[in-house]
Length: 249
Image (cartoon, rainbow, N blue to C red; front, side, top):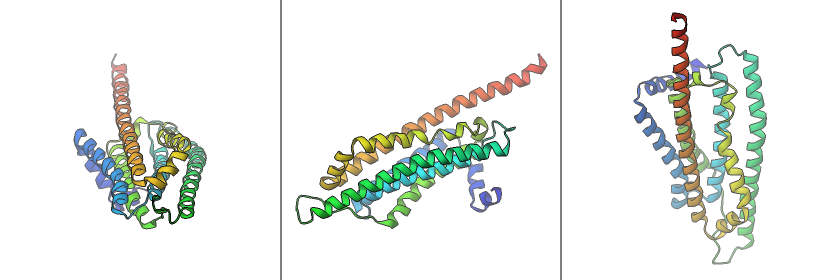
């Protein structure tokens, strides 16, 4: 993994992140979060993405979060004495549980998209309906890449560059992806009728609302993550100071 890390240039990025002043690192991170979330909106307004692509890209983000969580489980160093077998078991439990939830959400997203497409096609020729949404596969890569890089920056700069991995056990690394995916579930399920209506009558408004909610959620979770990381860092510093002072006393 270390060899691949260096080949991809992420080792250098991690070292740079370790040297960056904390406010500047946060500013870069927030900028990436904002820009990556605005790309789908720009794509819809520019005509090279539909609402359906936005839903798929946001679902793909849940997959990226799951994969990065596995990396964190494998590299967390707070419990250094944890056996490799226990780490593998923790990763397998996470993949099974989170994977089932992500798969269920993906099924629901694709069902909703297909239902909206079918409704639009059945209403073809009605002038006051929007055109049926289509899927632009290439846009998934472009918009998804921005979101991927945003999370990769966080993983590289904070987790490895600033050694935040020493603040977490593998078990604690399982839980951060869940708030986002669990928020998406009721958002889709409770508003499926509203979503389909907006899809047909005002798809741009739908995307604006979705991007606004998603951006607000991402910024909130980022602020919460930074707050918890600072608390863990203070607690770790206190433990280290106590360990040094103990033998002297």
